[in-house]
Amino acid sequence: MPASELLLGATAFFHQPVDFNQVVEASVQFPLIQFVELRGETPFLFPGKTTEEDLDLYRQVLREAGLRSTVHTTMYDINLATLNPYQKDANIACYKKYLDFAAAVGAEVIVVHGGELYEEFVNHPLSDEFLETARAHLCESLWELGEYARQLGIKIGLENSPPSSSKMRIVFNPESQIQILDRVNHPNVGALLDFAHAFLWGFDLTAYLEAIHPYLVEFHAHNNWGKGDDHLGLHQGEIDYRPLLNHPLVQGIPFIMEIRSYQELVQTMRWLEKVL
Image (cartoon, rainbow, N blue to C red; front, side):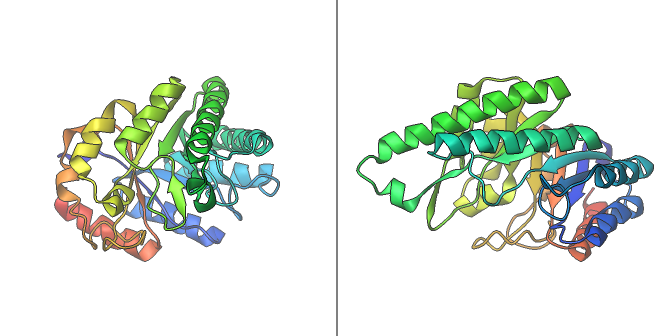
């Protein structure tokens, strides 16, 4: 595949401002990178902590580097599939703030996780009722967020989650992802396919891609050894990314390399320059 058909992007597990700066520097070093995904955790984008000055800085850095952007919302202390209706309302308010952040930095997509049921509810006599409530709350939340996103011109990408030993993931395979998206049926709510998460479940990645393609707004790409969510560079691990990179259905959709360190991102880019 010609490199120009791939919308490559990069992120890192930002823990300090230098991490963000390094990813931007990598985009200058490797012109194949067109996107940066900002992480929705402190000290970056986080409700109650991120200031207008911070947002101005991110916007300026992205503009000067000629980069497009997406935002990965918070993954911690939040659950879009909560059984608690009051917590559901709080979740919606939180994610609306992330949409405001995304609009402020000119991001095109925000990424959300579909949530989970905890083991106690899965093994409960009312587990079927709990599961339906969780799915309903997820769908209601996505619809309301979709309406808010429509006003801002932003897409929401519902990501497939990795396995968990203590929780039942609501969105983990193409069937569960499509079922939720069809139920929401909102033009601003689509799918994010995380190839490495799907691999940890043992799914055929090409089949998953082909099934979910009509819904896609973004990809996440990283690697692992088949046991844990390691977020390794694409060049190491058990996933062979070469056939995926050459698949026609990946073109034209932000392909965000969600890699744990700047060093592995650089190594991945050097590998990609040879592969592409």
